[in-house]
Amino acid sequence: MAEKPPYFRLSFFYLSYFAALGAFVPYWSVYLKHNHFDSIAIGQLMGLFMFSKLLAPLIWGWITDHSGSRLKWIRIAAFLTIFGLLPVLYQSGYWWMAVAMLLFGFFWNASLPQFEALTLNYLGSYTSRYSWIRLWGSIGFIAMVAGLPFVFKYQGVNSLPGVLLLLFIVTWLATFVISEKQQIHVPAFSSGKIITVIRHPMVIALFVACILQTASHGTYYTFFSIYLEELGYSRVFTGWMWALGVVAEVVLFLFIYKLADHFKTYQLFQFALFLTCLRWVLLATLADHLNILLVSQILHAASYGLFHISAIQLIHDWFPGRMQGRGQALYAGLSFGLGGALGSIISGYLWQYSGAAMSFLIMAVMAGLAWLAAILFIRKSELWKV
Image 1 (cartoon, one colour):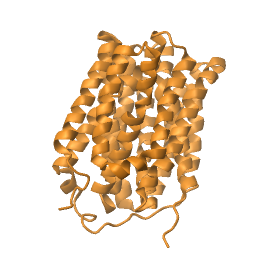
Image 2: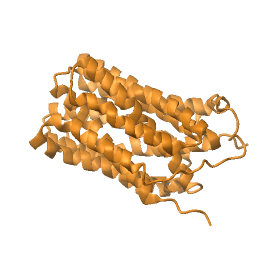
Image 3: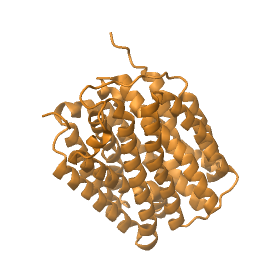
């Protein structure tokens, strides 16, 4: 009988990791603005953080796939994240902040892709149950985005680095409640060269689409909180809008198996890109209308949730056996690293010189190009099946 996956222990890591992300993503730009960084500097600093997502997963993916001890390196990365953040507690100058964000970003972004591979190894042929584990990450995210405005009300925005430090410590401790799980060996291409997979036209199209898709979130992740404040919404309301997006994501995670019964993985991926384009158009043009703003936040279920679930499933299927860690690392590095860095840096200049509406419209164009690449080149979910 197959070993039952440790759902609770796997979920604990996602809960703590994404709670930290829920503190960082919506409020770090607010923290930077509070410390007198302008829009261009904020975009550059967030871009540096995103750039660490390109390097870290690739380096850690290579190490873990060749060492045979994935969990050990996850623990090391989680531990070093704590020390990477410490400089922020004492200094806030531009270059000091840049070094600190690169440092803790490098280690923080190293652990998740490898934990994704570990989780999928535990699930084996039951990968559809991944969403039931991953939803706890969304719950952690919601708790932070909804709760932190009340913390800031009494402790101030400058309490954010301390909150992050505590969450990083909990994330590191969460790595000790799970044990190592050996990689699943798949006969066909598990021992082949990874370049054979990467050169496949559908894989190239997938990575191009992922880069553009994540880049299109640059304005949202960097300036959405600032955008709502400029439109006259309160900081507490802004937190609830972030939470609404992730609640919609949780609902998707609960019911995505029903979509999987009726649609192929690549079709869900394409649909997510199309809805992302629609979302940015709505934010660009009608965000001052509450009903439209609510709809745009509900679409986060597609722009992140459906996109991420379908993408990692394609990566898991297309990079079998000993390629799993590097496959997930490539996805994380190119998508959230390169794409995220480009999106953040571009959004800083767009916000400074073109304004909010044009920034979101350019993001909609990026998402539209991602959808076009997926429609033209990704035609099936099985890479090697004849």
